[in-house]
Each structure stands twice: as C-alpha cells, then as structure tokens.
Length: 502
Image 1: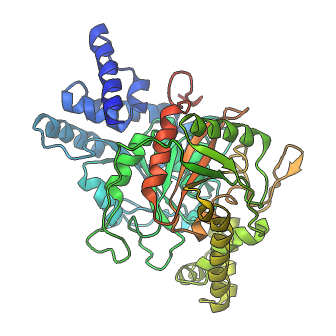
Image 2 (image 1 turned 90 degrees about the horizontal axis):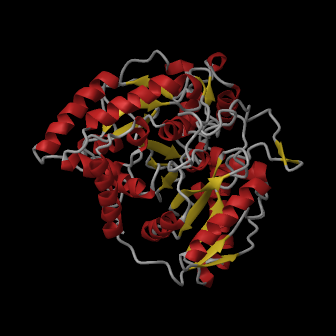
Image 3 (image 1 turned 180 degrees about the vertical axis):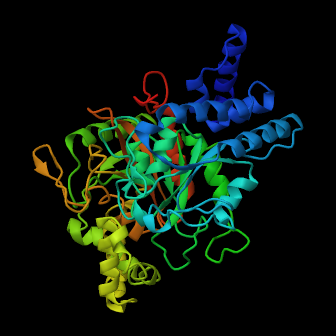
C-alpha cells in the first residue's frame, strides 16, 4: 500500500509542478492528511495555506451547515506558522500542522465544553486537557474548531436548544447523525482534516455513514476513556479517507499516563496482505428490521467491492430475536444502572432548559433511583446471548469478519424529533429509534472493533455506510479489510463526488 500511495502522491505533485498550477481552495480543504504531510515535508505547501482555506470555507458555508460551537482561528494560524518552521527544521511530529475538529465532549485547556446543553452554554473554560486530546496535541495537531452535538450526546440527530440544528453538507434536508454529528459534518464540509468522536450507541459510525466518512469505534480498552466501568462507550476517529483514519488511530490508541483501563499500544500497519479467500459474513438487519431499498442497493454494491478484492462474502441470516424498542433502550438501561445515573439525576431540577429527549433520560434516571442491579443483570445476560447468537453462525463457522449496514436509512430529516416524529420509507413505518438499531448491538458487544465505511450515495445524494465488524479485540483484521475495500470502492470527496455545500 505504501509504495502505491507514494506513487500516487508523486504523480499528483509532478502534475502540479509541471503545469505550474497552484492548489485550489477545494483541493486544500479536502486534501488528505497524508498528502498534506508529504507536501509540507517537501516545502511545496504550508500548513498556513490549509488553515486559511478551511477558515474561508467555514465562513462561506457554516451558516447553512451549523456544525461548529467555537472557532479558534487566530490561535490555529499561529500554530500553523510554527508547524511550518518545524517542517523546515525537520522537527515535525506525526500530525504536525494537521487540523482537527474537537467534539463538544473532549476537553482542551482554555476551551468551553457545553455538552450541547444550555445548562453549560455559559460555563467557564476548562483548565485541563483530557488524555486523548493531549495525544493529538502532542503529535502536532491543531484544534481549528469545536463541533456540535445533541444534548448530552443522547440522540442520533444533532440538534439542540443550545446550538440549533446541524445539517448535512451532502443534502441539507437531512441529518448529519449523532452524537458526533458536528465532527462529521465539519469533515464533510471541508472545515477540518480530522475529527474526534465518541460512540455509546453508534455516535461515531452513524455520522460517519451519513457524511460519507470512515469512522472507527475501537474495542473497549484500546483508546482512553474517562469512564472506566462504561464498557459500552469509547472514543474514536473520523476521517475522509482510510489512510487518514489509520493515521489518527495510531496516534490515539494505547495507554496514557493516567489510564487504568487501556491496553498497551499495538500499531496497526499500513502495509497489509490482500484478503483473497477471506470468509466474510453479511448479516444484514440481524432480524431487527430490514434496511430500506436505497440502503440495500448501496450495500450490495459494497459487497461486490469486497468480492472483487478476492474475499468470499456470504449472506448469513441472523435473528437476534429482540424488538427495536428493547434493543434501543438496552444501552440507556445499562448506562442508567451505573455511574451515569448520578449524573443525570443531578439535572432533575433543570429540565426546563433541556430538550425533550434529554429530559426523557433524566426522568428515567430518577425513576431508576440510582444503581439498579436487576437491570444491570438483565443487560449482562443479554450481552452473552447476543454474542452467542452471532458467533455461533459466523465466527464459529470460519468467518473472519461481519458486515452490516450502519443505518437503516440515510433519509432522516435534519430536524427530526427522535421521540415523537414518525418516519416512513418504502411505504413502511420505521421504528422510532431507527438511527441506532444496527449500531447498538456492537456497543453492547463493545469488545468488537467496528469501522463504518462509505458504501455510496443514495437517490437523494445522501451517503450510505457499511459496518466492518471484527472478532473481539481483533482491530488489525478490521483495518485490513477496510484498507482493501478503500482501494477498490468508489471515492467520495473526489472528482464529482463532493457535497453540494462547497
């Protein structure tokens, strides 16, 4: 892969140098991190150029997208100039001068974290940096913007009373997903090069799918999280290309100075063997609910990509035998039976400031009266049963990887009320929590690594995503399959395949 990548970069640079052409704003804002770094090292481009182009793009389009809470443009330009010097002096770090969007959940000293809530909209800047963010900063990354989230990260649509509605750059009629929706939209719109996300019920994978991105939900214990007992939640990466996703993963993975629940770092290589002969199982809607026709069409195309890469892809019928409502509430029941219960009960007297969906969780937390051993025991048993149903028909029969759609449909309105609105497609009423039903099983089974990859664009110019799911702890095989997929799949953010908001 590295040889091919260097060759492509060489061709790209040769064309520019030969023709004497300068980089256009569009080339700069969507340029992959790996290409930027190569150009920075050669002195053919400055981080300042990229930062200025991305600021310009933000100023032109964010009134339509609304994916940012706070900007840090002056500081970013200063850091970009310092990064330019690092490249000249050959003291550059792995992410030197690369811009990131920081989810309104991750802490950086001097920045305000609102959690998407009016309760914290006027809070003071933080006086510390969380350990995952510190890894990115230590690697030379530049925080250009902080990105929108639904209130307390509790919805698969990014809209809140604090920040309003975030709209999809591919089609502003539709949602960007949630809860890392602002991060994903900022990438798709060209405001940043990389972005952070977190995933408790699909919060990385859903926005990745709906914005045409690569999104990685690590297995529990691979990347630092502030919640040691919350094994259903974790932090991960979002990027426009596979190579950038891998680059960011290899920065944020592994132990930090104060992490008790993170395993030692294992680097995932960029050079991987092919997947010829690998057995892969497509498990579809898992008996929960069938994907729409528009989603199925793009997923079928994605399966063919892997077959062309030499994999043996079979459709395997799996029925998890769980109804959508029970599945959708399973993660919240688990969360509200643990440490998060105290957090939410503390908002009981503040619900007049909150969205309806956040208020619903607060009321559930109060009714649970804190730690609920019976509910937690039920969830523990559900986790065992879900994995047995999946593994008995796939991994135990020789399959190495599972595939599933990321979302039932990509046609979810940007302003959807996730509690009260009814969504219909193909003449069928979709379940209330349709946005999370294919991702939640792999938060309950959070030891399984998952990458959502772009599968194509549907009839409304909305991206469709497919999950590549690995055995517990086997991140390397997931990245290997995603790597080979990315080589042969149709490319978004290239040629004519760009978001409409440019």
